Each structure stands twice: as structure tokens, then as C-alpha cells.
Length: 67
Image 1: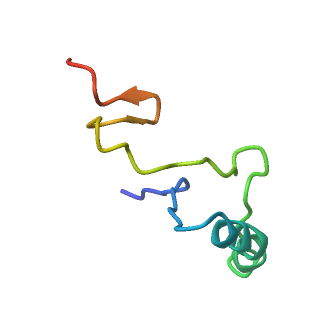
Image 2: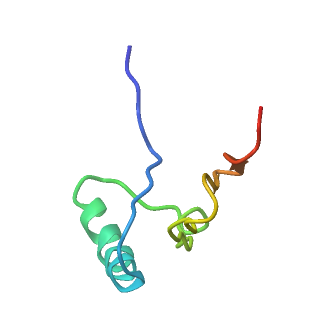
């Protein structure tokens, strides 16, 4: 069985670091014959949850809800 993973999420401590990677990553991927889909690649603001609230939302799911 062969599996391919073509999606990934990266976290950064600063927006500046994320933007630097977005600038150089396509060039590095080219070395391996890979490309980055411009419509799927984006920066998403992500903040630490407030201390007065546990959980949060990730990938459209709210972890504060009871299932």
C-alpha cells in the first residue's frame, strides 16, 4: 500500500516567520518536483485561548461543545 500525505499545517510564533516560509517554500519544493497550490495555501490567524475559556475552535469544530 502506498499513501501520500499532501496536506500539512505549520504553526509559527510570529506572522513574519510564517510569511518568510511562504516566500521560500515553493522554491524548495521545486527541488523535489512539488508545487504549492496558491488557492489552498494561506495564513490563518491562531491565538492562544483565553484563560477564562477552555477549548476552542479548530478545523470548524468547537471543542467547547458537549457532544
